Image (cartoon, rainbow, N blue to C red; front, side, top):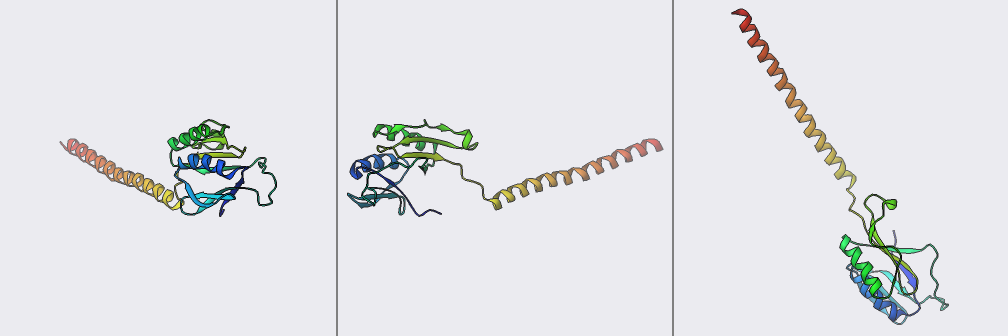
Length: 171
């Protein structure tokens, strides 16, 4: 849905040192550099930008705004948080589970050098609906096969018992 996100900073060079260290922990890198005005980060194309406000006015932080970056492991979330603090950011939420956000949510929140709120978060990959349906179908099929297999065995066992009983009765 989104092409990119930008946050304002007061000093692009200073912010770049911070974001090089912090985003590097998640596997993101500097992909575009229009210093001293803006720098873009991402994996294949710049998706997150830091820069001076376009109106040349003073930078300000959006109230209620934060940017969440995807992590691929809990270790990456923890490294992100540690790197942010080491680079001068401030803590806004230790790495850990966030059950209020979902049963598998794991994240860490920090403020960058200019007060922008950023986060690293780990979400397990959702199972596509078709895959989930196939798994359910396989489970049902296995259960059904077991039930079907048991029925003939029960019938056969009952017949064998009846046959033996009849033989005994004849004797």
